[in-house]
Length: 282
Image (cartoon, rainbow, N blue to C red; front, side, top):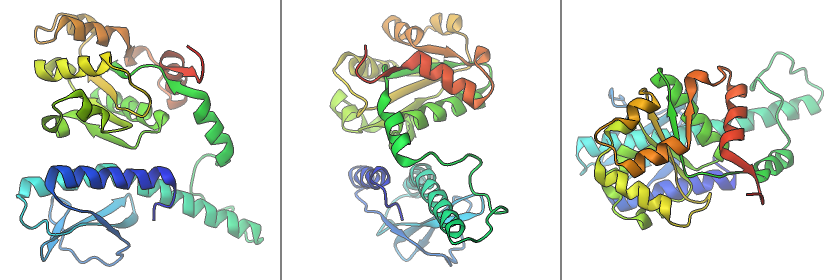
């Protein structure tokens, strides 16, 4: 389970967050028959342990176990559940698909007919080619502002940006904001994507922290802020609660999704052109 280096780093970072924020550990178990009597919150207590089944669609991916979590409030247990599922399920599902694809390839090499077995819609890109491709492009900004009329499209574009940058976790800024007091706190998060929905409502203290972060030396090993709003740039510019300098940052690196291509391929190309550069170039 999670054999590649990128996903091992994901688990390590998640464990660090749970330890620092809640004082709890994390274990991953390949439990396939978990009669949890799951609550509507998507988790259950077995003794004092918090059990969080991990699944996407019909694929059961395992169970995250947070030992001795029974002393936490129900709110904290729900927050942990959301964080664990949000971070681990995409990584585990990616690993699941890769293993399925490898199994299909092995069957084909043994001469068995796999024409009716499909796991991915696209032909897999050889690992060394994908590695070279990721090394050739690098993000040239640390904040991207997405705006358009559809909130769901903003979220999808934010997730696409996250995927393209290969960051280890995608987390709503509001979920961890109270634990971030200094730029060092932000830098220590590593290569994480932080989503700020409805940026026009961001409080002044958080704006100042983001501005301070954008003023220091950073790299692609540090957080990327993705802000979103269904307001136009003109409306954001007139928003009374936003600092002038913060508005300037939003205007400088904004993408109007209503004018962007509808297809993921087209949107990816636009994002590449606007926010990425070839490694080693200005």
